[in-house]
Length: 258
Image (cartoon, rainbow, N blue to C red):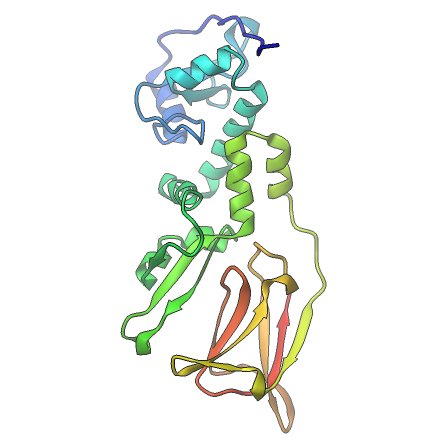
């Protein structure tokens, strides 16, 4: 059996300009369907339809291109997906600006470890990094003359965009729900555990020891004659598959990851 077609309902014409502007601004003047994002002529779709009393309010309107609007009324696009996409626009629109949302969608289109940039470029993703949706790691040092980093989505970020594009509200709810608490992980290491690479020493802890996709908090302790001492002259980064410590001189100590 084919998809059940919906009868095209009555649509209110001549909506107030300020109302239309709010709805278009929310979607960035693009179709609200994340797999479309068409920037051409856009329709104002009533989520709670006019013929059942749906009001002309920003929360009840979503911008759709004519093609996606027609696909909805043909039954190809599900009503639940419209609700999910509207919810995501409202949620992301309050957390991030439109440029940041575009960056989130952009990162979902490129393979991991392909996007390499300078530190200034990394700053453009700072809000997404802070939200645990994007992670960056040192790519090349070259004695600090040319430092580059790779930027990519965390697993949480990838799951979020995938669920958003699918319009699956259940998947979105699972991704956006708070993570379950996990027990701290502690690992001791010796001077022999370090690997020399391009003039520095690196020690890594695999991602499996912490919640993958969520940036962990950590403490590194140096082993001294008096015991463990917090604080060290080293750089700690969190690439997609490990927590990495980088230093100029190997030392023994402990890393504690929460």
